[in-house]
Amino acid sequence: MADTIFTKIINKEIPASIVYETDTVLAFKDINPKAPVHILIIPKLNIDRIQNFDTINHPDLLAHLVEAAQKIATDFNLAESGYRLVINNGDNGGQEVNHLHIHLLGGRKMTWPPG
Image 1: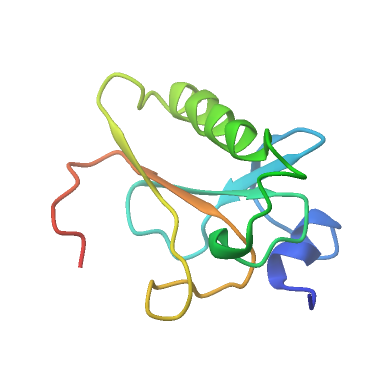
Image 2: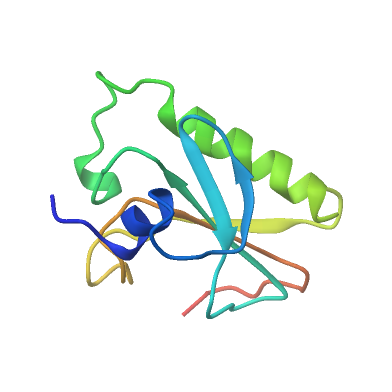
């Protein structure tokens, strides 16, 4: 799989406003936020999309991503008021960067359907 902007952020080749990091996960502020709080949570593994995620070889990775979301939501005072987690998959699903990522959106009332 080719490198993406997210791979370059993981490798610290380009700057990002990092809010959380472990050995397996990196989270940073979205540069085009859709809510007052808009954080991208990515695995450090180079996985292009959720459809191609290998649960057998990486059984705990999604749990690590969700745990990161929970911690970040608490850090940004969203745990009680609520927030949204979104995973887009493929072009028609709205995925713009071919690297698995979760959007954490909060700080305002979310509407449905999202669009």
